[in-house]
Image 1 (cartoon, rainbow, N blue to C red):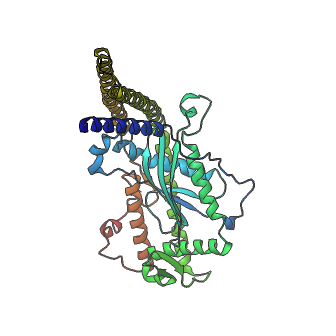
Image 2: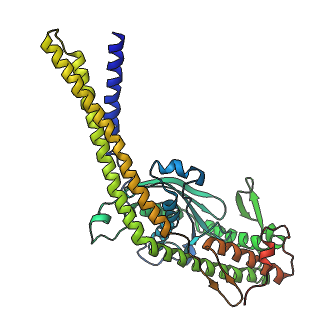
Image 3: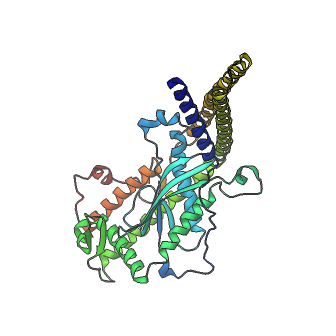
Length: 411
């Protein structure tokens, strides 16, 4: 009796788990996101500049092998950590509600609003990201997860030119706008002032550090005092800030070019991934359905009444048939590996094509090489060195880039 009860319990558990899993395959996330756009020119005093940082890929190198078994590939995520923020940037730019919207390789003190993103899940079928928005004063506007199933028309309708996850980008843009419209003019002015003073303090802390107060363990910034409107040192800082913004614009163009270069390959990968994920779901549904039928057949045989030879024969046939169906369902789970291997091959080809580009930024006095991230870090070091030399202030010798920053620029 104990063996029979245990068997019944296990089979019932299989049926319940299978039904719940099958139902979850059809769950959808996200509401329709219609992008809000300005119907007229927004007053300049209401515009804030936005820096979108390169996204966190959500993949650690040490975990890459383990993640590959789940269909998550380091090479693809690295490419997506640049592709996704560019798409978000272009969405924000199209609304008309913001000032300059740029893509930055790192957090910049002059940023009025900064967006950070982490990729939590990305396939051709579904995109999940976490977005954090923060202004220059250190106040967090929001930190939210966004989930979006792909719009299949992006893969099958030649006349449909939207990104498969365009509604996700629209919802992020709408949420950012919803927070901005609540800000009073005084608050917007404060955000601008703090951003300007944070940049100045980063360039020359000995001169500008006392213009700001820091609260809550240095996470919040507040204006302590303002320089005069004709302060010559602040005028120099503003000129340097303009040059810094010009370089970020150049890097932004680089990232946009990177997006264009990878678009065809990436879209092909997403479309193939979309088909693979659909195939995976079809296999799961078949496997679960066969497990349900198999377990139900075995239960029916166990509870069948009668002791005749014919009754026992029916029971045995039902148990055998149910067991075969159950084994078939389990076997189909193994077939999923084939689809994952196909995704791995696609990811490997994409990773090979999506290496960071080496670019030269030529000016009158210096030349930067390396990845965009390396170029910007070198630029910041040079900028700070030149500014401090101009003011007659020494560069901190303990600065990790002091030697590089003080090097003679290439003519």
